[in-house]
Amino acid sequence: MKVIKLGGELVGERSNEMLFAEIANVAKLEPVVLIHGGGDEVTYIAERLGVRQKFVTSSSGIESRYTDEETIKVYSMVMSGLISKRIALKLLKQGLRPFCITGIDGLCVMAERKKRLLIKEGDRKFFIEGGFTGVIKNVDVKVFNMLIEGGFIPIVSPVAIGIEGEMLNVDSDRMASAIASAMKADHLIFLTNVDGVYVDGKLIEELDANEIEKIMERIGQGMKMKLLASMQALRNGTKKVIIANGFAEDLNLSNLEYMSKKTILTPC
Image 1: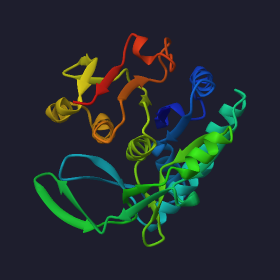
Image 2 (image 1 turned 90 degrees about the vertical axis):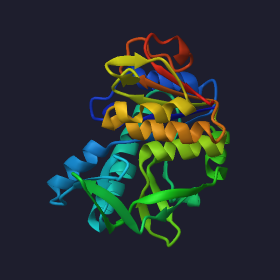
Image 3 (image 1 turned 60 degrees about the vertical axis):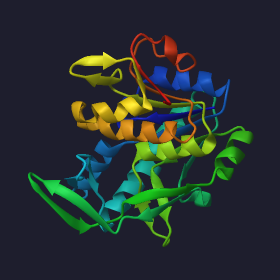
Image 4 (image 1 turned 90 degrees about the horizontal axis):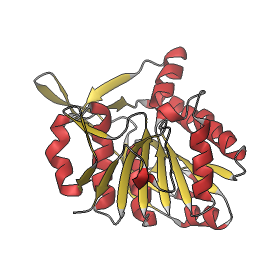
């Protein structure tokens, strides 16, 4: 089976029709679970609604959205409402039966709320209140299996249920990794708007889990979370992770290895 993460660039209003045709081709051959991002659209709509967005950098150098109480409301509304339904409409046109869910539905993804965050600004490091961001603790695959067995393709928004019953932002890359691990997926595929992992301007075609840590300081901010999520999935049983460009003219989700440009990540 394949777990496919669609980056926010691919699920906008002008999304790539060829991409959804490719997803349909794969879904007719094997089980597929989709996870999507869409952070830029969350930011745009939040700002339009007067909810100021703040981004922080962790002590390890990862930039992320600070999710306060008002932001989690907008985040959930945009991710599990607008974006997931937009994807569903694209898949319906391809003859598939999409089913939109979050981690809250059926308690399929549970997370623990971060009580505080260690962030840095320049040379300073300090703690702030954790907001409504969570660390995934458990994925219950029963809902996903039930949907797949019923002929549906799950579309999962990156919203989880907290252990205290609250709604949490858990990051879409982390969500994809956790679901791929729990489902024992053959492939976890990150589709984005770049051809793969670049180091010093050169595309890296293959990496193993141990090599990921060695290049973390030499890659762009947007790729760091994907590599951390990839490493987690590989160490939890996923056989292969592929990072590729969802806009590529030779996109072939059935045979991604044959694409001219991509990065393949394997276990150690």
